[in-house]
Amino acid sequence: MISSTKTSLFLGLLVLAVLALAGCSQVPPAMPTTSPLTLPTTQESPLASPANDPAAIPTPPEGFGMVTGVVLLEATGQPPREAVMFLGTFSVGDGDFPIVDVNRQTAPSAIPSPTTGRFVIADVSPGQYGLSYWTPDGSALVNDPADPQYSLILTIEAGKTIDVGTLRAPSF
Image 1 (cartoon, rainbow, N blue to C red):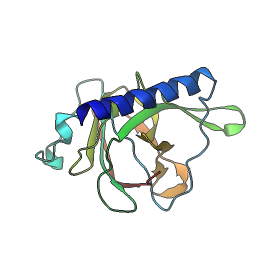
Image 2 (image 1 turned 180 degrees about the vertical axis):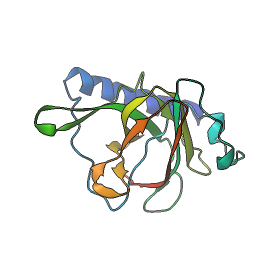
Image 3 (image 1 turned 90 degrees about the vertical axis):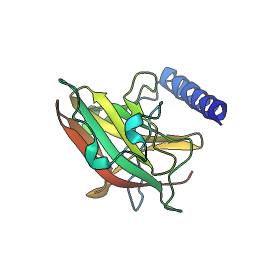
């Protein structure tokens, strides 16, 4: 199963690299859905272990922030398989068009726990990020729970942890 996950991740990264080379770094606002999405990381963090109490998530190291949450499939309420959560750098382009640039090789990321869906993206440099959800079948920006027609943009501060709560991801 691990080699299948690595193969899927490699293929996903390859597709994203091709898109990046083709100049597809502009991302439109989040897809309209009834609930927000979330992306996991490239390595399962021991912090995302179902044995760990969410309240016991450590303070981020000096100079960094953290993002934590739970991602479940909208259709089943179960954690997604082979998913990755990524943080892409956020900026505003021409005409106030939001741009989230996700470089899957360098972006902060986490793989949700396969049993609970909990993820922890650790050691995040301060700044603004868009949260992205990736699976081998598709990817999308996470919607803002307060206003699902917009993408969730997080402002990371040093020494702080942002808990995005439970996010509902679509099945592609």
